[in-house]
Length: 265
Image (cartoon, rainbow, N blue to C red):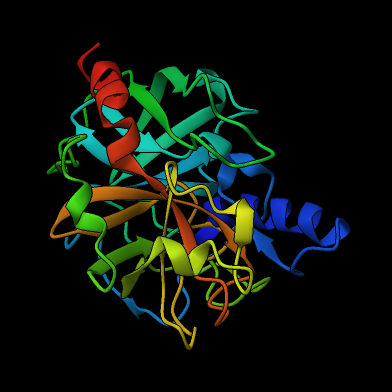
């Protein structure tokens, strides 16, 4: 899964490993995992995807991704922010390279984490950051609660982030992107995949049956775009780009109304 966000997922993966689950569980940023970039993708630029934000510490070290949905609101994963405060993070926009100095750096004035977020089950893995100053970039629209049809199996989705390009590898200095197909709930919830750990009401899977393309550590919190609209958030998974374990994303339609309230506040 993507960069730092899924990196925290990796941490969750470590917990899963300890429990005897698949060796490298990549969980979204707030799930205690390590940073990771997109596996099997290609390099791109911030100008191509201006709504993709870096979430960093106060020294601008990126650990998760996020999506700008209004000038002062960023949607990301709850697991990215569970141990953070508004004062401990920064949001960086318009910066293609992690080691760059261009773009816009904004402080946060508020962090909202879904009250039902569960770090053990990774359900309700969604959060909204309110920025102290506006970002001058094009925003992304997001799905409404009624648009559940966007998750039809086989639908092409786009993933974008700075995560590692292999499980446990190094983060990508340049923004990367790839496309992956949505995977049926019955497949992700089967005994040969995630089984009961996959909660269809809160999660959606995306990836190829053969593996090879996925988000990874460091991608956590970043976007899953379907038809140019934000439909999911990089959350967690076992390893990265593994054939039996596609990436798991927060199913945004489930939380759209609640998120919309936060965006309007």
